[in-house]
Image 1 (cartoon, one colour):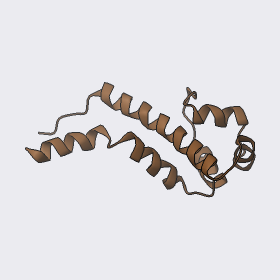
Image 2 (cartoon, one colour):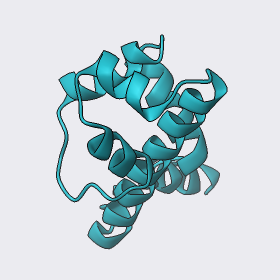
Image 3 (cartoon, helix red, strand yellow):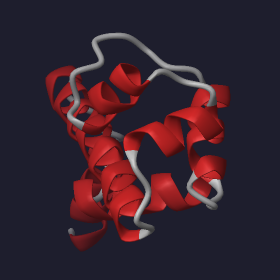
Image 4 (cartoon, helix red, strand yellow):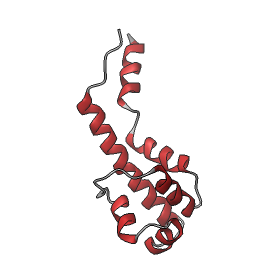
Length: 104
């Protein structure tokens, strides 16, 4: 029988993934030598919004379209952002639970 993922664990993972997504944006931006202003202008977002994304201070959902514009402003695909964030955050709890079940 499949054990459901604990809601609190899932929420912590989502928060960590969001934090890592912001870190990934900042890392890609600085690696490419781009300023907040350059990326914000290319992505059609405000500089304060971009800074909040990078520092995990956004307390709202953001659209996939907006994230896609950020990725393209960095010369990337959205997959690249999610891949880096996912690598930082580690495996999602439902995969960890599956791995633990597979070991039994």
